[in-house]
Image (cartoon, rainbow, N blue to C red; front, side, top):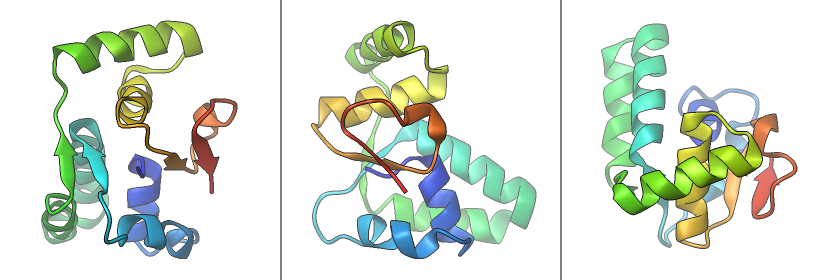
Length: 119
């Protein structure tokens, strides 16, 4: 599961885009938390405009989008307290844990957590 930092690298063809590509382009199940949709869409719209943001949304919505339900919200709150993560990061990490998915990121906030691959 790729977090917002990875999607931004990939969509903008930034320096680590090729590192994230295999995880995003994988033919197997790719999870996208709704908070990632929000963060990436907003940042892309502000930095590069609606067309680029819509292109991202079109691609991300073809993956398995995971909504924030009650159980996930409570899990994320516990993760936030235990790991001292901000809300969005806690939701992303809790989503990865729910599906026993490896979290692929370039965000140093996750570096010491199990189940995380730092790119």
